[in-house]
Every structure is written in C-alpha cells, then in structure tokens.
Amino acid sequence: MSASHPLSPLSAVEVQAAVALVKGLPEFSATVRIISVTLEEPDKSSVHSGGTNPNREASAVLFDNATNGGWVVGLNLTQNCVTSLHPTPVGAQPMMSIDEQVECERAVLTSPVFHAALKKQYGDIDPSLVMVDIWSAGNYGSEEDRTRRLARPLCFLRSDPTDNGYARPIEGIRPVVDLNTMTVLRVEEYGQWPLPPQSGNYAADRVPNQRTDIQLLSITQPNGPSFTVDGNSIAWQNWKFVVGFSAREGLTLHHIRYADRSILYRASLTEMVVPYGDPRPTQARKNAFDVGEYGMGMCANSLRLGCDCLGHIVYLDGHLCDSRGRPLTIPNAICIHEEDFGILWKHTDRRLPDSPEVRRSRRFVVSSVSTVENYEYGFFWYFYQDGNIQFEIKLTGILSLGAAQSGEKPPHGSMIAPQLYAPHHQHFFNMRLDFDIDGTQNTVQQIDVVADAVDEANLYANAFRSRATALTTEKQACANLNLETARSWKIVNPSVKNAVGEPVGYKLFPGDNAVPYASPEAWWRKRAGFVDHHVWVTPFAADEKYAAGDYPNQSLGGDGLPRWTAADRPIENTDVVLWYTFGHTHLPRPEDYPVMPTAYIGFLLKPNGFFDQNPANDVPQSAVQKKAIGLPTASCCGTG
Ligand SMILES: [Cu+2]
Image: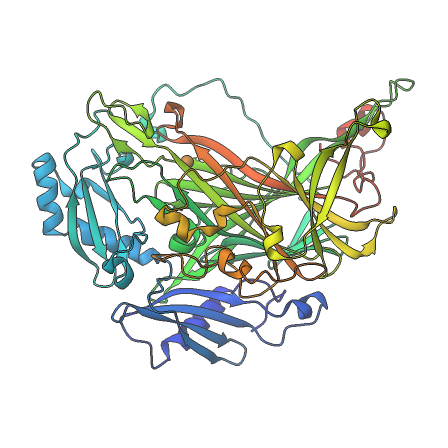
C-alpha cells in the first residue's frame, strides 16, 4: 500500500485493512466498538527531509460496551500487523460514534418510561414525531458520570416528519441514556411547559413568496483552475500543502510551504466547547465539546456543487468507518476551489492617471462543513497571493432552543418567537498551529505596542513603538488578547535572517474573541482549561494534539494544555506549537431564527519579514484590464 504523500489521510482500503487487523485481536468481540481509525503520522524529520515513508501506520481507538473500557491500538498497515495495544485510562470515554447517535434516538423512542412521561406532558401525541438529539452528558461529579457511558438527549416534537422539530422543544423531560446497554436509565421531569405555538420552517418548499429579483451570477474558468491536486497534495501559485481528514478533527492541513519554504507543519482544530449560560435545570448541563465528544470528521457533510461551493471545484472524500467497522466514506467532504477576492493592491500615480496599477486578488479555499445535531460549523482555510493564511469558522444552523411559559421572559436568553427562547451561550475554539518557519527551530514573540514616555526624546508626545518579548517558557507564554497594546504574536526563526537583518517570521493576528463568562468553578470549565488563555505555547510533542486532552467526554478535567504546561518546559528556539483559543459570545436574536445567517470568526497569519518585499508584486494584470488597455491577454493569469 502506498500514498502519494506520507501525511495523506488513510484511504478507504487502508481503513478497512486497519479494521481487519483490529477485528483479529483476541480483545475484539461483538460488544467492542471501533470509535476511530486514524493515520499515525510519520516522524516530522522524515517528512521535512523529503524521504519516502517505508511504512503506513494507523491507530484505532476501541471501546467495549461490556466493560466500559477501551484500548488504543497501533497498526502497521504496510506490514499488516498490530504494533501496540494499550488500555485507555480507567473511566476514559472516547467520543460518541455516529451509530450511537442513531441507536440512542431509537432507545428513547421505544422506551415505555419515555412514552409515559410524554403522555403526562402532552396527552396522546404520536411518539414517531418526536426527534431525539444525542447530547453529551458531561461530568458533574456523580457516581454514574464516572462509571457509565452516558448521554442526556434533548427532545423535540415535529408536526410532520419534515417539519423543523427544533421549533418545539419538549422542555420538561430529559431522558438519561446508558450508551453501553443502550437503554433509558430514567426520564427526569422538571415541570410542564406548553409546546411553542408557531412552526419555524425554513425549507424551500415551506417558504412561500420567495424573492424573485435575483439574476443569474455565473462563475466560469474557461481555461480550468490554476491549482493541481495529486491525491491529497495541493499546489496553487506558490503554495503547497497536504489536506488531511480524520473522524475526530475533520479537516486538517499539513506541511504548508510557500515557494518550497516551510511555514506550518500542521494546523488543526483541536477542540471546541459550547457552554450555555442558563441555570434553569433543563438547560444548565448544556455544553458540547464538538470535537472530543462528537467528532468533527464524523459529522462532516457531503458538499454539493452550486450550493456549498461555486466555481471550478475539486472535492476530496473522507474515509472513515462506523463503530462496527463498516466503511463510512463521506463523498465530497472537502471542497477545493479559487475565488476572486477584490483588490490585491493598487496605486495610481497622479502624474500618470491613465495607467493605474491594480491587481485582482485571488484566494484559494479549502473547506468542509460539519453538522453537529442542530448546529453547522463551516471550516474555511484561505490562502492568498501575498502569503497570508486565513482561517475562518462559519457558524450557522439552528439555535438550541427552550420553551417559555406564556408571558415569561427568561433572563438568561433571548425570546425568539412566541413562547420560544434561545439561551445565551458561547462558542470556544482551539487551534493547534505547529509552526515550522524555515525549519523547526522557532521562537514565539509576544508583540505589544506601547507609547513612549513623554520626555526630551519625545517632545511632541507622539512616539510609540512595538515591544517584542521572546517567550522562553510555557507559563510565561500564557496570555490573553490586549486591546491597549494591540497584542499579536510573531513566530520567528532566529537563525534565518531577511534582507533587513531580522529573523524571518509570521504573525498571528487575532480576530474576534471572548473570555468565558461561566465561573472557573463551572464543571465544564474544569474540562476546558484551554479557555483560560487565548494563547498557549508548548514545545512540539507528537502526542499532544487535543487542547482538552485525549478523552474530554465525561472527563473530570485538568487534562490537555493546563496539565502539559504545568511542567513549564522551555520553548525558545526549539520546535514550538502555538495554541490559539478564540470565542464567540452568542446572545441570540430573532433574526437567528428559524435558521441562523452565518456568523464568522477566525484569525489571520501574515508574513512579517518572511519575505523581503510584497511577494505579490509579480501578479500580472487581469485579462479584462489588459484588454482595456490593448495588451494581448493570451498568457494572462490574473482573475477576470
Ligand atoms: Cu451560537
């Protein structure tokens, strides 16, 4: 078995080879679920040296519903053998599989206890119209939180099978499901709320009077796209990188280079958590760790041309397996295309008004979208001609809603429709950015802009400067954004100097962000220590991949970044990883209903002394521009 690049994700054939090996283990039985099968990445040094990888390796996480315990299995797919088998820590709950979502819904819908609770609330309603979303149980210190594999689903009532059920939350009852036995342990009852009276549909066939004044906008690339795709290796303009995909992380990017100079070795969303801020007993436990509990790759959409992506598209499939080892390929999981992005640069010399120099900007987009029950997250990487890399998360989908009594205005949420409210919540994301700027030995600097003292050297009191603090140890590196100093972070290679004698570098420019409003005592915050700081820096360790640790599901907390950085390891002039946490505070609006217009959050990585001047100075004029001034257009590669 071979793959075009050693960091290419597992193919469907490789996933099935891994499944066959796992199923051959004496530990494997009918009660064992295969939670994930993932590429075990080769050593970084072998990738940087361009060596071919002699072995394709994988790791599988298994979980036995009979014993409430699991294993991590190392696999060599080239040699077709198992290389290691370790039990997971006692009590560790790997993420919930896609099968458990379906089985959990069925368990609730066929439970006589649930039917009885439903009848008490609403009389004789058709249980087949109830919709049950699996929700992770978290850990609130109880015996069962520690000893069972649990879910606390939320339930909704549709008026017909294609109705938007989220419009009618069944507020008063909360089933608790043991995912090991796949049975309803009990149904918790919190009182009675009437079903909100209005429907909230958004599907095309349910929205009458759609607008009619939109003319066709077509994007064509008659000569084809400007990128090449070889397996999962991508080349566009000066950029080269590898697209990865896994059940837990979803879309990842690897070995990002510009003009064959290394910038980022690996970039991934390591965790996210959505804590809700409503203390009502039916809402207080809501906080979803969408990566470590649900799996961003497992929840990835199959994207559609003309809907999710526009233009000349190349899609990549995502190859996974379900928890029984059956192939689970998500066709078109990743979309790859180019977009026009307005003006790249421009200057008009007023003495030469007929010859403005302007260039169109084009950006290269790699994206995927995941649906985690009610919510959608789009993950968009943008590469630009001037060396910028942008990451943007698009938040859309349906709010997680609650029912309100007639006339009630819940204080910890916003009224959205009659007797329907949306609790306040936040979305915190954590990105692991393994920079390798022109090599692996890098240093992170915290950059603060400060005003000079007013003295004889600053007579006009106008002076300010940027102050770079080299981050030397993990504890020193922990920091939050600071508006007063326009704080940013620069990753430099101290051994490689640019034309002005400074170390080459890239800068992290944060975008929107937030601090958590829940107390540090909140149960979810113990499990999500990564929200305590916006920036963390660690020395590279291949097994430190997830900001909340390997097993955040039902964890007691403390794992991940807080645990690793307690060692206060040195981080100067070594292989460093920068972890960036960013949050979106969502006070819902009626306009977010029934389906939410996209909200955006992300960050920008900009070359900062990485190049000696604007690297996009060599972008030619666009075809339209050349035509307008009478130049031949045949060899033109500018947009339009
Ligand atoms: Cu939100």
